[in-house]
Length: 438
Ligand SMILES: Cc1cc2nc3c(=O)[nH]c(=O)nc-3n(C[C@H](O)[C@H](O)[C@H](O)COP(=O)(O)OP(=O)(O)OC[C@H]3O[C@@H](n4cnc5c(N)ncnc54)[C@H](O)[C@@H]3O)c2cc1C
Image (cartoon, rainbow, N blue to C red; front, side, top):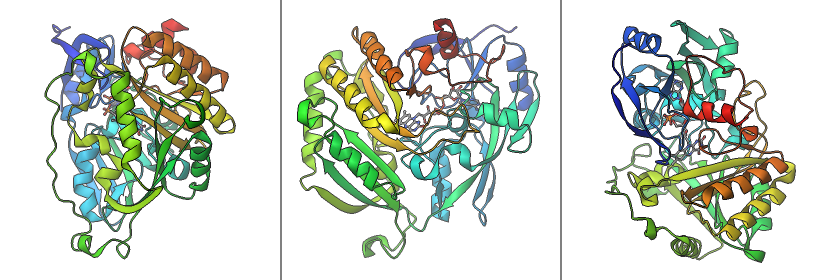
């Protein structure tokens, strides 16, 4: 075995930070050799999972698997290597009148990461997960074989790899369907909700909208618990957009993106600053309902307007806690979770509520089940572990589960929906932690 070139690696939450071997190759022979010569390997895309899912003793970075393979413009089918980022794909396809069927809240993730986490967007209730649109992918397995996987070929590997968190091998390339659009704009309605009852009613009334998401002020208590703003949207048709956008409806003006230059000192982000942020965010919208047209970047990727925004949480990092509670008990469960957070005083800048539709039973490793899902960012501090334990207990009590791609400290009983991925070669620090926890 060659000497390791270790480096400091961490994912989006900057927690945990590890020193491990990380390498990227672009030729199949070299990738095979890398895998063969190591006992434990995991693939890493762009490290946008928050915790320890794409960390291992030896990390294979797909950064150099960054080539487009084909684009069938007539039928909207794209094939590319697994390290290609969604941001690169959007640059090519939007101008051609196409969009991704499913996209997360950042465009800076790789295609391999999208499959391995079987990502969902604001449209799960209407259009499901990323896997719904995959035609096939190629997978390098533990024996050094490259398997073509689809619903009809190596179907067992196809389904275990979807949502399989990299534990079945390295996805090398993928072919998937795209969605037709007429413009790069979204017809959006933002509606303020005073409390949890109102936001749940709004979600139910909005089920026929393709995209729904709510920002929640998670520090409110009593009658105002669940105070929030629902954003619902549809891809705008050409005849709907204002005349000033009509000229080049599929092209957006380039925007300059500022960068957070350094880690913020720990004292800057505290309960008071989170309270102030939440207050101003809610009050910024003065009317109950605002209807407008926004470009797709603002609608889908509001956080991408600042590079390295994760540094505002300071050097100790942060976690994202995302759970789903079955629909029938959704409101009750969310109330208990929000009460627990408000009492703990551990505020979350970002608290996002979404509705999941029915899950695809074949994609058994996918996180979504029909219900409400809440994602919360928490700065890592000495009280966080005990808050996570309390939240885990509530999620368990309500029959929910935790999203593996965000997890870095949850109980194994909430993550054990992951099946058929035991593998001596492809091992992540997350999976080891979960197994040892059992
Ligand atoms: C701001 C922000 C918003 C987000 N919003 C959402 C959201 O709305 N919905 C959602 O579902 N997710 C969301 N995420 C999470 C993100 O979409 C997933 O974590 C995604 O998997 C990250 O992809 P990546 O390329 O960065 O992969 P990494 O973070 O590097 O890895 C993630 C997982 O994929 C595996 N993996 C990566 N590449 C491969 C490969 N080629 N072969 C095999 N396995 C591989 C890794 O082993 C790991 O288990 C968000 C993340 C951020 C930072």
